[in-house]
Image (cartoon, rainbow, N blue to C red; front, side, top):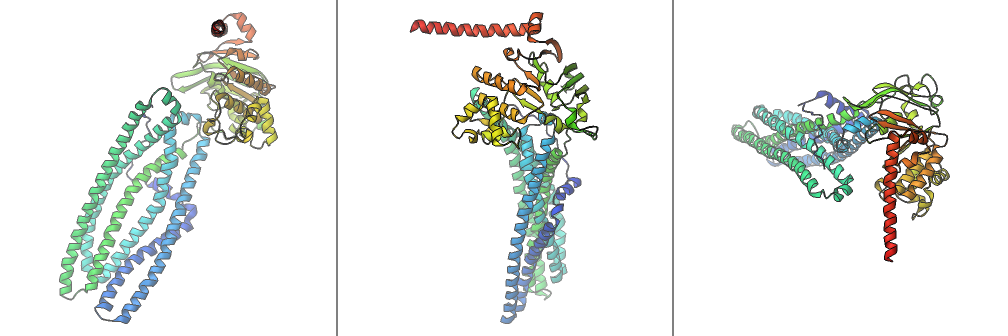
Length: 612
């Protein structure tokens, strides 16, 4: 497991009004639900305050006055309010739940759609774990703030307002005592919550790193076990979780200290009310019910203030999550269609398979060129093989053809037209690829082949499998084409996955076909099947083949030896062998190696025969 030192954007703003407005802008289209939601919350909060006022009336007007009729009427009113509150609470929880799910769905859908549009360079520099944390936990935190945070704010504000009104109606002197203590409560709340937010920011950053660690360890579990890396990975993971535990512990400690301080301030306020209220009652300025109601309103006043402080802290955490989420949504694809792409002529008519690299230069990192002044002209229907040492630029060439990346210098033309003027979808929809490590999606064999052309019928899927040489092994599966391939195709061998990916490419009917070292990890029998499928697919199509097994490219129209981002040699297999240059050295070295391996097999077979 690598040390996760990827530096995520640091979001340390105390209060970002634009981000808050954008968060709540996510519910703009649901404004009728939001209004109903806030109205129900206000109804519930006002009902809570009115219950306390009814308690005062019961004590003063019914119990102390010995008036059973008055008691019955107030109790009946109490019951009606409880029924109304129960209905309001049901509606409030229902609207909160549905609104939260809708917001979270919209955010995740928006992020997923945008991820499909981002360029490969974004994924090169952004670990999967960071993306997953934004799509899952960060979007959930935003939806929680928008719904339950809004719920708490509306409830707290309504409670504070209603409690204030009722307290001033009962006795303005006692109400003044409460308002003297509120500034102290606010100061304590803000100071503590700011420190708590800082610790939770650390927790969020470490959570993203842990998510990345999970992803790396689980997806690479075979390599981990093969290299006996379990203890090393556990040590790295323990360090990350230890840091997160420490930050969480500090936040919990501050939260635990905050609550007793608030309770002390509240207790002092209650003590002052009991003392001064007792004097007021002795002088006949306030009733017993009024004192009891005042004590209730103190609680109603103090807890909402604490709730607002808690929501403020949650908002700070949610702002950090929102900034991360919106940074993903706002990420600009480095490769996109120009405003006039496809306007000059029909895209279908400008891409016949002719491809030209005209003095192309490219680098992934500044100062580390991969291709330098690279030029190559490929005619429609021609098969080009790319060979050479690792890191020479072979895969970069085909990635540029697919427009996964764009050159920093020079021009790439498709049938004479700058391919930046052709819609990106039109280019990539006409290219078929079979990679060294094929990727299958969870689902059936049939669904994975049909992924090449979703409108294909079953007969076309099976025909593509036959042309790829995959039909025979598929027929041997328990449920043939309906057999599940497993996550990433883990129920199939590498060769079987490669044949399915080849069938997928055949079904797509591409104008340009790219084979990127597709036979380097398969056995000889599977290689021969792939070769036959390749011949079917390449017939009449412009094709690029990247291969380390040079025996597979002898029939290519041209072989290009790529070294240090340039063409060192180019020609047919026969002409390059006669030239006795770079290709000759590569080919003869590989041929000698294969012959030595074959000789060892014959010697082993001979010794076994002699033993028998």
